[in-house]
Image (cartoon, rainbow, N blue to C red; front, side):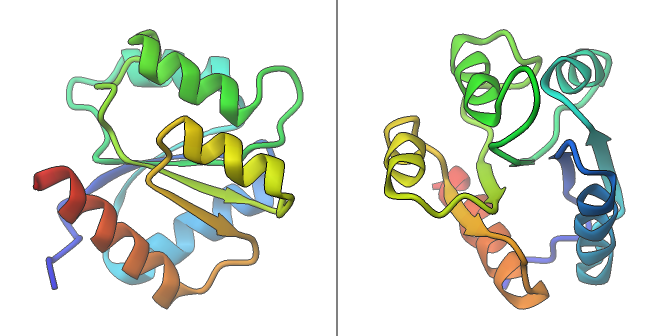
Length: 134
């Protein structure tokens, strides 16, 4: 299993509580370089200002204004401020088949339903990082 402590991640969720909870959970895994954004526009501004892009993106789907799907489309178009092949892990309360299908069509690395467990989160990060390297 790869040591995840060196990773840099972005958490994009409009709910401040979820942003904090995800960041705390990532901290228990040893990840300390965590960027947080409440919306797509804030995330893009934040990412474009970073010298090194995040290794993994955690994205909520349902947000006011631009959605997580909008952000993923921007990522693939090269306008999100990070490489288009950056792994995306969806963290959402949305369990409908349309959302899962759309995520799959957009090439999302992983789709997780909230609430999240530390073990599952760590396993998904490991898989995402391993897949990107291969």
